[in-house]
Length: 263
Image (tube, rainbow, N blue to C red; front, side, top):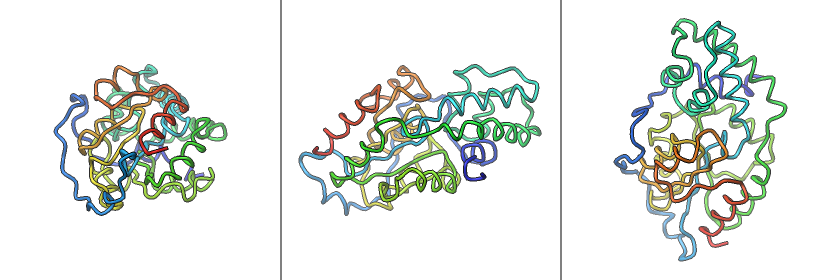
């Protein structure tokens, strides 16, 4: 079951540096080491050559389960229950920033116990979690356009690999990065590594995510972004990061993306 508790392991134990929590979403972009090789593949009707997706709350319907598990684990330790807003906001952040927002009263020495309680509560929801309806056919359609697809997520590597293998997603994604193998959001390292690996320059990359952390990462990497409002953060938080658009359903996301890749 260790692979199933992927967000838990990263959320409570990864020591990921996440700069700029609470800063304005419009940050100075950083340069990428990406090769321009794949830019030759661009066509007049295709705006992007790489689309990077966040996982939880964007493709995978897990936000409510994560939020509830955070709340319940804090209560188990005898501390005040975080609000839904507090608990959902920290999805995608590193350890210290996440706990400062969701459980500011819990002392550092009790983090391991907090993590154990989180695993207990989150594991009870695993059997009911799945991709959002419509995500798989959307990804399959995007794949036919020739655009490269990637995942940039706060999950662990073992956890992401397991879920990709069990959800008929083998061969869909060209590459991925997880929080335990690179810097956490909104640091741009995840996107910079994906661009370097896949040979795509920032101006040909789109980041799709449900939190301001995702969109700020895109800003920091010099990439465009698309917000989705059906995940962890509300539209006002997403709008503040100046994405190209904010979509409100998987069908709207599909229509928007397909129109940008020539389909």
